[in-house]
Amino acid sequence: MKKMNFDDAVKMVLLALAAMVVLSIPATFLEGDNSLYAGYLAPQIAFFFVPLIYIKYKGADFATETLLKAPISYKSVLFTFPVTVGVFLQNLLLTVSFVWLMDSLGVTMSVALPPLNSTEAVLMSLFIIAILPAIGEETLFRGVLVGAAEKKGRAFAIFVPALIFALMHGNPAQLVHQFLLGAALSYITLRTGSVVYAMLIHFFNNAIALTLPYIIPAFNNLGILSAKSVIIMAVMMLAGILILYPSLQMLVKFSGEKPLSRQEVRIFTFFGKKDTASCYNNNNLESKPVRSYWLAVLIVTLTAILILNTVLLSVPGLSDALA
View (cartoon, one colour):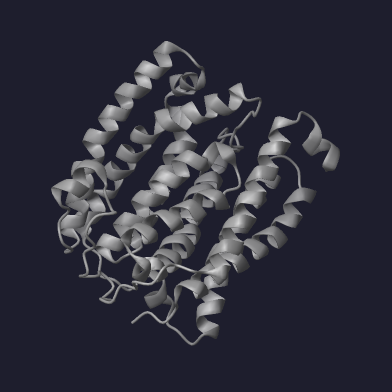
């Protein structure tokens, strides 16, 4: 049985944020790809080891608190890749449209990735940018945060951790996709009771984002605002929807949990009647309003960081002047 409450989970995220900032300092003294790798590595160390230390300090079981003990269905594992492809295709037009909107407002957004110009670079990038985030981020945001938030209600446990997950990246370019991806991963974790499926989907998502521009060079052209790009991404969105929801239904079905309702499959309406048969065996949902000082502190802090990063991106030369 899980011992950590929601405030404990939020405190872990705040501590991980502080640890991430401290661990990221050495990256500022490095140059080139080494700086990028160090910048990606620091958060994952914080996201994994902060919960590990905190949970052990509280005398709880790490595997139980992070939902790593739940049984895994290998049939469900087979559907993690189609779910990833579906989410990626479904979200692409929304993500790129947001980038275009911000560009029109004078905010140039991008995600810095190291070049895959050698076998060593490919392996290093997959390890640091795909494997480690799948473990570290899912341990904290789905294993700890979603698991602890479940008693607040299904909608809260899906969308609040997704918002925190998106804000934690601190990059406006990642805001839309990370929120939508985070909501899907939270939902899967709630329905299956295991964080392992979310870890696999997160790995596939990052691996696709990292390698697709090299595998299909024309993919890079979709970022150019044009009617052709919109039409192509609209078709991709439709294909993503057709892939995602049947695959999601099969993943949940084979995990042994209650199959998705038609309403959930159709429009992901989590705000309706709550299913009190909890996948964590916590059958008593809290009816009182959510009042968490720590949650308010966390969201305000992350929002402030995102706004600061957005300002730095919108004012040419400002970030270099402050460096």
